[in-house]
Image (cartoon, rainbow, N blue to C red):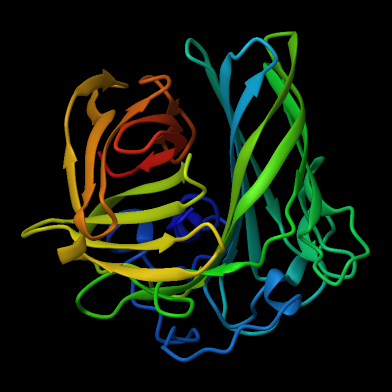
Length: 357
């Protein structure tokens, strides 16, 4: 993801546990001032595997995976898994019930006709959720993203699992490609005022395994994408939501795009072009034309489920369409998220997330 919702936990989940928590501002609380927490500034030197783990001092972060999958008959599916970490205080974590971190998990599966989503909540410090290194393991209850590799890169081979009453998946994700720093060497700006996150991805995963929907199993495979972001105040109070795209092009290239919508004025656009060798180029608003096309009514909202994307400098002129226009995440923090198909100058597949509608 791409911006996510961990900050909203400060009000939705913990106001009953910590009455000193302030009222949030901006979409999902992400625009609330966070002066006590560590700011995101350009020039960070990333270090792995340490940056796969939690970051004390920052208010919010997430581990996020999407997979575009097909079975042996060519039926298309999507799978999504996210673990959010929200810190109530900027101090280092402590063990036990005095721990100041809350965890939230989201998981979903999508087909052309079905969409199921589920969520989990946990308090840190008591073993119910967390992220550890050596070996890498991110978990909440029995949902896990865990390394299967003794290689120097713990994300070279990982197992992804989630289960709920209507669905489950067990997927193996592998890649021998290097990680990708998004934005300007990992500094991903989200507004003209300078709000930003630290952001890296593994967009070259190959997924394979078992997906089950409503009791029916499917052997599936396809491309997958992992995002890691952390920040303290990634949005301004005037940003109402965002549209995020991750695209696997048939040419072997990958594209990430953010469209941050404002209460007034034009959206803030940014993105990253990733070539087939993993080299990146920062995309600015002037490089991108991102236009909503067809809409559909979902949960009482009008959602743009078909988009035109034009990046002239890369000869990209495509239309993306939702596999399932009804892919509404009907959770305590609702949003739209699901797989998309590509047509035009490039074929491919990807994922779209839309919030704040």
